[in-house]
Image 1 (cartoon, rainbow, N blue to C red):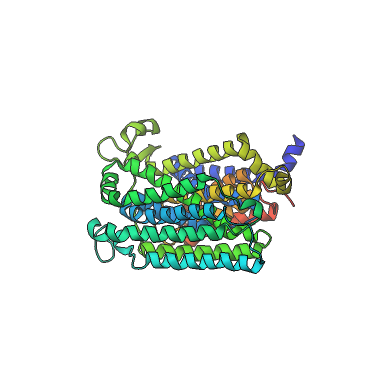
Image 2 (cartoon, one colour):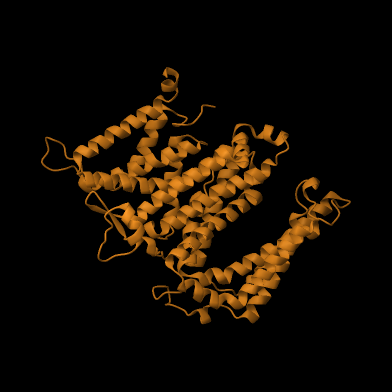
Length: 503
């Protein structure tokens, strides 16, 4: 018992401080106000956890500080909003991506049948560089004149007014040649990629890759005549189904972007931490500019799905059990309505926490990930492809961030400042919990969320001292600074974080 207390002194002291603050709030505020503060803190904590958990997993296994994580969170919000409210943008851009990926699969298969090396090394290097340059040139040629702005303008509030789908999307006679050119660019890109890396990993002669590539191109072409009917169908279904689709789009897109970043950009820089930081910062800026180019600088508001948006007689729901049948927009909590969508965010964070914890603790891949955190060289010596595990973990962390962005869209809105704020709080949560600790990320996110909610309440109500007639009013920036203050206090007591281990 003494040893346990000694090992967890900082954590126990922190919990004691949190309990003392909760007791103070109970005496200072009415029970309904205290409950609202706690639920608001849990809501923010759940969102911060979705960012912090991915950051913690990536750093714990790969020692990579991903400063593009906030951009992935923001990208998830924009893609989720698009899938939910403007599917024509996805339906007109997804085939382009599928054609390029399909061509790349075919190109890698073709490259696997070529000789491993040319007679002179410089010729081999020149060949794959020429293939990359040519593929980029073909991509630029393929997308020339393709305007996404009309596809974004689907509402009266859009810049320039709403544009109908018939006028916004490109005719099939022009669109299909773009797909064919992108397929050719993908083939050239795949051929170039097949010339990179050790010889033992270059042989891709199986027909599976070629069949997958041909299938992706076929799907891309098949979507072209279905763009308008598919949009009509998606907008006619329930908002609940569209919201689930948005979450799936965020999950898949975030995972794909994460895997692409790790394999193409991060992998060559594992031994250069400073370069990793600079690279991920650059990726964040590029991603933000890409979002500006596609969606513009104006923000969007994503409607709350129907399962948490009902109003009228019988609302707010008297309790959580009743909400499952009436789906009111708010739930009565000790006499004060609290938005039910925020409770959904809390539940989503809890479900993801349990799911990832079970993945890490009960599955074979989880054992490999945890072993890789401890000693990646030993895992490699056992015949396990650590590179593939690295890619999987980076994709998982990125997918969690993107899902968090989709969930945050109806709560925080969709705007260009979304990623930076959440990323900052996510880093603070990771530092508080301990770099590389999944449990620490959850505890840190919870502390940061509670501190932010409590700080917001103090800004609204002020601090009433016994000898003063009026409460002391504070700036809203105090609420944001409270999380940094907690981080500083934790680091003073325990530099490695609450659950971190000393090197």
